[in-house]
Image 1 (cartoon, rainbow, N blue to C red):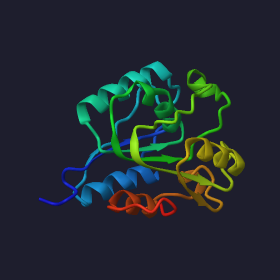
Image 2 (cartoon, rainbow, N blue to C red):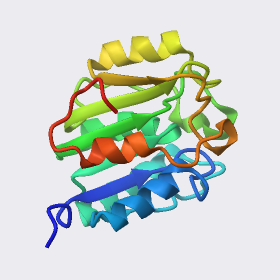
Image 3 (cartoon, rainbow, N blue to C red):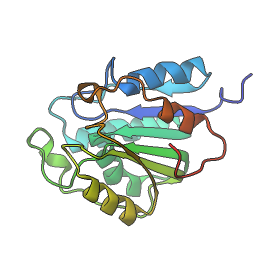
Image 4 (cartoon, rainbow, N blue to C red):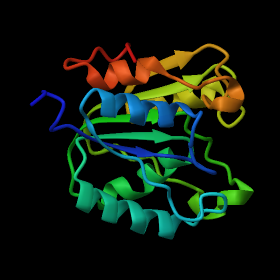
Length: 187
């Protein structure tokens, strides 16, 4: 039995999902190859999501799956900010990738405005952002990271860190999850 076989990773996608060739799809496959137990559900109405539907779905998934690690991309970060205060959970790790600014998106109006919690329900937390994300400027990302008081990885010209920005695999995400002792400046 491998040391990873008891580690459970929940991967939460953003608006419109994260199917192949998104880095989250690669991450799910790579984690399974490394003997992690992975849940990568498709959230309801992914192209026109409703916060209450997503909250209900994810709370049930958390209760059923009992993850040690959660990986969020884009709108899933905002979902996490909304639900973490309601949770009785203490994750080992939480990865927040490419959060979006606190301004309404027409496709996901119910998610805004969003709270910024001081307790994100994880021992180790990292946020990854890009120098040219159209949904959150670097200054906005640094301000959010500062409010959250967490580690951050800044990626040069990575857009929204998705396939349209040229990202398939994101090996640094896998490396961070696999690392037993985390240096916050290393994602």
